[in-house]
Length: 536
Image: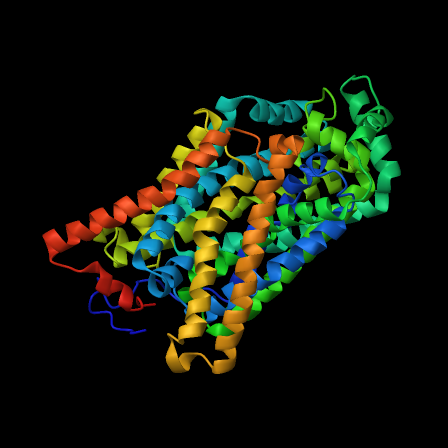
């Protein structure tokens, strides 16, 4: 692969080597987001027999290892800030790279909108103000949070405000994003899971039972923990190996697949390969450990019968939703401890704050890379003196705002597994195939040893099979289990299927159109651009 930039817009990307190992670890922790594991656990009623959350989390970790290794090696070997786009467009084909790039620019802002709504607002901001309300005995804050959950207009306004804030942050100097990610990592991704897990394990089921009954009393509601627990008994089946594996795959798709974060900033790390390698490994192992810990702890404290019933039907007519996740589950167990309530509120909010920032920022770098390849207008390659792809950042923020509107007020409905399945099909799988070709054809020459080439091929094939089996089971199980389908793929199946079909069609049409345009107007064969590596 050549490294001649003459065909490109300029000799430097304009990005600055600002990030260190802690940033790489932070981006992995921020995207894996252990406190977001609750979202997959809520699928439990749809996979009867998956009765051990901790075991499923550990099995899911095993599924994720081969793809993680491939992404780690690609980030080390090709340190460019645009992730899969460079690997796919250079080692597979420019058309496939264009499809991936278009998919990224459309679906990653969609994913950022989803995480802003579901995680930053519903699982972060709302439970935080509610726990503060409990701490200061101001139940108006509890009802305010509930109003945001139940009123689509309030949810849209709140989510839009956060999206605009995130757009501002990624448009500024990288140090601001770095600072937010670091604070989120230490106080949210590390301290948050430790505190919540400690409450679950120390208090146990006895404390959760009394705390839930107390919550009903506070809001003058009838019922009890035992009544919901008994009703949930029909939702629990004997341990089943197959459904445990299906549940493990859901956890790996929703949680463990988010190791791709650092690869989108690979050209901006100081210290080269070691910075990326150790940062990714440390961040991923820590995140995966906390996912398994939280999953096991929550099941231990809440009880599977109650958990499954509440996941499907809610936990009573109280202005606090069971779907708000770990922070609220732990919070009701310490309602008489204002210090712990404040601590959970702060760590929970900070944990859920940074994920959409990183997602929007990485998508902006794909815009930058595609403009360098003249697939997008050259103007979008503009980078500020501080190293921020300013126009790309504004573009993806605008797209994300559109998706926020569509998901709150516009009637568009797609689940997390639906979005991530799309990304796995059109981004992760082609990236893994490109790694196999990289190893087999020795495209980088002396930059990669024979031993590493063999590892890329062998582990790449294993990762590709792993990915196909995972997506196949996650999607295919819905055919034989209608309850699973209604829970895991809740929403409008037409929206999901339309997006899956439209993306490759849109990418192909766009590629053919821009190729012809560049040849006619600029006299440029863009195929030549994909035979060189872009600048760092």
